[in-house]
Amino acid sequence: MNGGVKLKKLKLSISILMLTFVLVACGSVDKTTTTKNTSGNGNQKTEITGQNSSKYYKTVLKNGKYQVSKSRGVSTQQNSNNFNLKSFDKGMLDISKKVFSTDKYVFQEGQYISSERTQNWLGRYSKKNPSGLNPKKVKGKLVPEYIQQINEQDYLVPVGKNLSLGGMTIGIGVNSIYYYQKEQYGATYEKKLTNDQIKYQGKLAAQKILNRLRKNNKLKNIPIVFALYKQAPDDSLIGGNFYAYSVNKNGANKISSWNKVNQKKYVFPIADGEKSPNSNDASSFNEFKSQVQNYFPNLSGITAQAQYNDGALTGMHVNVNTQFYSQTEVTSFTQYLQTAAQKYLPANAPIDITVSSAQGVQSFLSRGSNDRSFTFHIFDSF
Image 1 (cartoon, rainbow, N blue to C red):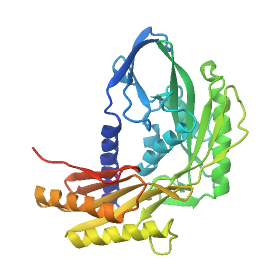
Image 2 (tube, rainbow, N blue to C red):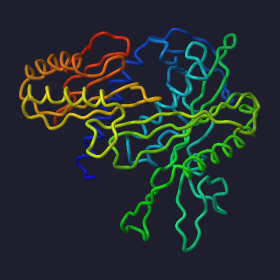
Image 3 (cartoon, rainbow, N blue to C red):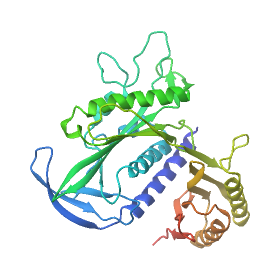
Image 4 (cartoon, one colour):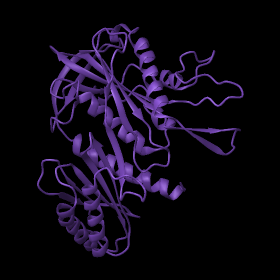
């Protein structure tokens, strides 16, 4: 993939991420308490942010600061596909909600697995790195690296005036393709990994991580959820898919069972030769695209990322790229999109539409799964 396309993907992902943050995290701080600092540095003033919807977790501020992950940045360094990063984090939250209710638990970024430890775990096993989860090198043999991402999410519960760790989710991202070089700075080759390899290596890594976490007295008796994720290729326009999760109750040291996750992602319009997830949804999007292209000149592309769980559409991100010459064009086009989207795009699923040009995001439209119409915001200049 050329640099221009990668840049567009990055800009789009950042724009959507910023919009999501603004919409989700704008709640007020609604609870203040004093908790004991588990690091041994004394007491901290802990605030719990407001909750705009039961779909989202409240989060924690300590001394007025958001608690970033102890392994912050490691996943970004390990992954060149920004769509993988976003869908990995979002999917972990969705699986966590099955176990840790948003009404009872408070979310906090991972505080128990450090960056150094995460990097070691993502490395190959060797004498210098005995904690590596990827298999050791074998001279003269191609041995893939399977484990690409590890992320921790903590879930706290109020206990009197304190917050106590009530559970944890560990996400494990497994490669679908192993990229390698035969010599330093040489050409990059790829080896496609089988589904059996992906499933086996993910479960193997989860058991090893569980054994390590249980050695920490603070994690010995809490429920720990493992979520396994099949990464999309580096050049994919969509993220990967979660395929299994396991709930390990208080004190469990062995993963005895896994729950299957039937999740698939697609790019619309469906490419020739690819199987459509739903013929009606594909036709609806194609009609929407045709109508919009007829309405406005200089459109450089209309695509969508769609997610299906158990065969049902659970969300769609529509990306519209064009060139505007005035603010009135932006306004008129956005109002037309509101009507066309309501008429042609699939119903009963959350959909958002980002309208972008070379100058950045111009407008944003969205509709929740239970909403009857789209709302929009135009980014005016002042």
